[in-house]
Image (cartoon, rainbow, N blue to C red; front, side, top):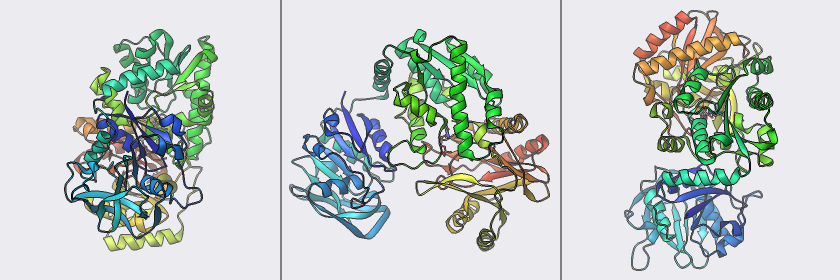
Length: 598
Ligand code: XMP
């Protein structure tokens, strides 16, 4: 099978590049920066990704020099473009102008000048830039094949060796003709552009068979899209007698979820699925734990203990059974699972116990290269019903993360943050307050843990968005903004809160009401996901809930979604009847907020 390697230098868009190439009809996979040239010899071409470093930084990621002697076409993007010029004898310098966002690329024209990389590309094409450094002198054999007003060497090429470098990002959709440029590169590589997701299913099955040779496989089935698709694939690749699914009820699931999972799997004809109720173990392990990463790690490790107990009960030898997981690409990147990425949060499928099993080669993750929407595509192809495939994503640690814990008044807001927020709110003519809780966010590719700022006094999403942007840019102590939809009288006060059965049951009921409101109003398909969050706060002595509806396409970035206020008002009545004291609505994009609160 023809395939393209994308060498990872820690860029935001590395996997997006691989994905775009697949969308264009050629299989593509990401390889680490330190991959040996010999390992890349079987590819049709190599793309060097972007990355946050400068080539002159002491710890700048490098690649094997040998890849330039493989005789393969190479495309360097942003950092990859600079690194290639630097390594082949050119020069990179600090750009006079730092360019971020759109720029106008003019491909070189004239006899012998027009590059195959810009076939069918306009004379003036919008491209997306994000860089400080730039190439200032070209290596021997290269010429300029395109420039922008602020970047002379925006596109360079050595047609004889088929080496090309682009300072901009053709992989992002904001680069209007970026897909055409990537397609042109694939043509330079001599690729047939005939690969499709259908072939991928066959590839995945082959990979599973090779990896699991001589072993049986035990899959933790949460009932979400990813694990369901992984289960179906494993069954196809290995046969049902070598696969056992285990659904562990961790007590952190949504209402009726475990029963639904079992019913669905039976309807699909699977009888190799067991259910184990681990609620008591999970809740006892979480007792007294409030810090979000600690909770995640406990939940992840408890999955493994409960799994081992289940294996023992079934008299199965753990050494004969590999562990399979429905891990997808964003799980790995957020857990700091690639060499140059920061830990935003530890996903349940990336805790130490799992990493140890991985080091022994005992974990199989057939979907680990894919984004959610690709998994959905594979699932539909495998004949999994659309109503299951279209379910909103739900994280493995479930309500365990969405129920924010605190030991009491442990996150008071400092006076400077209050004053700063009040200043901003005043300019917007809005009321509000910084809340004495903290949650995880992601800013500049790194984790933050900071306060939400509540705003009140508008029902206009644009005004809320503008106020949120100002607050987030100007108040360092704030990483999210929430709009107060409705609330009982009285002050917001911190309360102690843990993952107890009673608090989880309250959140479960609230979550069920919120999901029903989406479904009953035909809004379920319009949002990507809508976490419902219970804060360690009270209002008028009653619990405080946050709704976090978002639109997204792969969960790496997201916009807050705008639901009709009529729906929210009706929902508030139901939540108030359930006992809620306040309904807040998250108006933060990702970044700086993550999709989940924790
Ligand atoms: P964040 O909150 O990081 O979430 O913006 C991005 C997507 O990942 C999901 N998520 C998880 N999924 N295990 C999972 O299977 C996890 O530990 C986990 N944490 C977050 C989240 O629901 C969203 O779709």
